[in-house]
Image: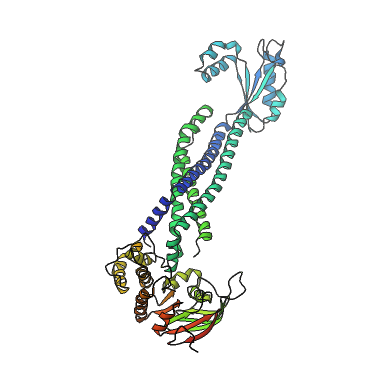
Length: 302
Length: 229
């Protein structure tokens, strides 16, 4: 096998079909980048879920004085007895692991921490505006139904917030994003197949004289087909490299940015990014090889 | 060397067979003219030898191999032992004489050292010494056909198939082409040449196999083109 012969043929082929080659590279790059983003969202979701699994609580907010919630109208705020009863009821439930009371001062402190840069909000809200709440930690975060049933509408309770539901909405959004990325990726993979098919066909047509002679003098099928397949491989590899750059950029600017807000310490690791990149790279090249091969079978009789 | 046993070939979508129960033997080192009008099956005969087509029935042996039992994988190896020359030369226009001949060896993976040694020899054999670096469009038709013959012969095939090699060439130049073919034949290579050219067949006095409507109507050693019976 004469490597330089093959490579000069490949180079000629790529140059002759430059526009098609660029189209292939762009399609492969975008397709593989979207596939990679899908995979990265996947692992981001699972690491965020792990992070949140032992942190989600059901917050049972209690009425304060002059509370605007309809349940609290005229009650003048929760009294100590109601609060103790509520706590006892919840603690007695089998699903509950732990109940803690967050008084107004603590709530205010947490609020200040969370909104440290929002001075307008900080100056407007006073300690008295913060409600007391019961923080209910569940043994199984999924089993929130009965707890919410039990406390909703009980005297002294203004509102029940299930953090899990909030998170679920967010994860649902992420999952939608993932599915759309994957769907577009699949469509692009299909387009890549057709594009490569066309490129190879053009290439085979423009070189039919050479391949005809190669067949005639007894060049092996491998020798005849390899330059065409290599064209696909090189286009696929270049597309993969562009996709890798896009994935790295999206990790730095998109994923790291988003997760900062939501769950510190669940950053997408560089190892994950590297493995996603290698998966997409291999996948991209594989698609190109397969597409070239199938087209060659049809357009390059041996 | 080439052995056809009761070979019939019918192309798809055609009722009339291109070759109809043809049996013929070509021995090693023979020079055979294949004559007959257009559509008589000459080209089909050559294509069957190369296993570019498969017969519908009958057996073909080439260089001791049964083509029916030759796997697709091994067809290239069969073709390495067969050289081919065509009416339209089929040279690569962007390669010079030397590169055109060398191409045939490069694509079957011969080492460069070997190529450098044998290509000039063959270029000289076909009478193109000193023109190795000309491009095909700088050569006359006869010279281009010599390049094609050099390319067909450079790998020292056992058989040389020529499909109307003088079809595009004037009679005077054709004589030169035939001399080269004769020279190649004298090295022990079996030559099968399909042709319309009566003058050439008559002057060479070689074996003539005449086809008509896919049937062999004459097989004569030291024959002529016209009806000799």
